[in-house]
Amino acid sequence: MAATPPKLSTASRDLAAASIIASLLAYVLVIVGTRAFGADRFAAVSVVWTWWMLCAAVVTFPLQHWAIRTAAAGASTSTALRASLIAAALLGTAAAATALHLSGDVFADSLITYAIVVAITPVGSWCIGVSRAFLVSAARCEWLRSPSGSRT
Image (cartoon, rainbow, N blue to C red):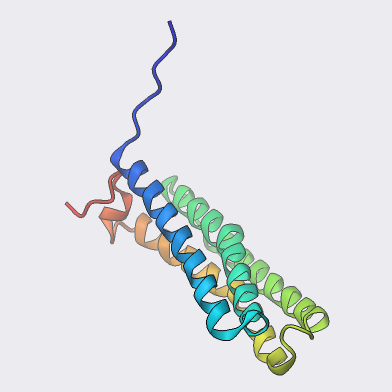
């Protein structure tokens, strides 16, 4: 007899629905932006947006979960947080240098602005990850830690 799969919790269903809705809205934004500004002008927006999402996946979420687990274990995170901030700054610097070198066609009019945005995005992602970890581990937002996300 086959085992029955576990039922999805309400939080899991809500997360799946929110992910689908966010993906559809992102697609709508790209369509509207491309039609409103033209493909050439909107290309810069989509590149910056992609870089931001990559930084969120590579910097924000792993750092957030690592810091929460470390704080829950009672260990100090200060040295590792400083090291991770330096790593995020180096990632931003390397990405900005690459952007300055490779992206003349897409960002010809605002190359310096683009390089600055690319450079600060990993550091901003670091700040978001640390802030979320602090809020959760300090129990300032207890509802963030609850399985259902409810504020009860």
